[in-house]
Length: 105
Ligand code: SF4
Ligand code: F3S
Image 1 (cartoon, helix red, strand yellow):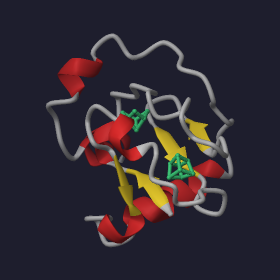
Image 2 (cartoon, helix red, strand yellow; image 1 turned 90 degrees about the vertical axis):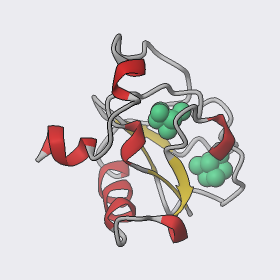
Image 3 (cartoon, rainbow, N blue to C red; image 1 turned 45 degrees about the vertical axis):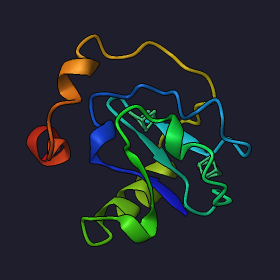
Image 4 (cartoon, rainbow, N blue to C red; image 1 turned 120 degrees about the horizontal axis):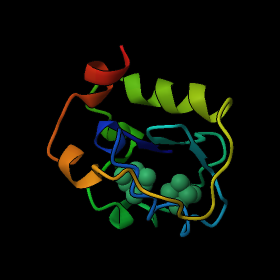
């Protein structure tokens, strides 16, 4: 499966959602996740993300943490298939790393 990782947090550009053939993105207030059981591994979304937040789960650089986050929240958050309003400071937030830890724990 593919997963959404830290770079998405507070950037949420949403270019990814409109290309997914199985509509398996789910929307939180500050970032998106992919439903690992629904993703068909097509890879189409990966190059769409301007901040390279989307990766195969084999490249989860946080020891499976992001697979867990995608798994957990995709079961709770609503589905998203159309680009909505991006955070006003998305381009600023794109320069930061470790955003999940900084802002959500
Ligand atoms: Fe959707 Fe394909 Fe991306 Fe999986 S890899 S989330 S199926 S676009
Ligand atoms: Fe996030 Fe990139 Fe999609 S910032 S919303 S994974 S285009």
